[in-house]
Length: 136
Image (cartoon, rainbow, N blue to C red):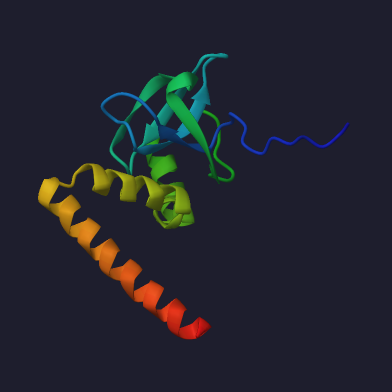
């Protein structure tokens, strides 16, 4: 059998990012697979209640809980998440940091956007002068 290009599979213990709904942007863990369309997810440390969720509203992450038994309760999932530091790993990932940056930019008001523009202009000016000095 040839090796597969896929590395993220729908499996018990896979950490998922919720894409839609009121819990959008939070992470949870697949606790049980129901069928080809839905899984039971649980996020006791991230504020996601145990519930059935369709795959089309989930994004699979590269993170996975190891040795999670099928149908594990919230207590077992919480202990494993804390032991393996899943939330900390997620927060340090480039993916989560990009999402946080995007969220922060969307929350800026008009004056904050103006201040960012001015700071970018000042930075660009300093860089341009440094490049000119280095090439001369």
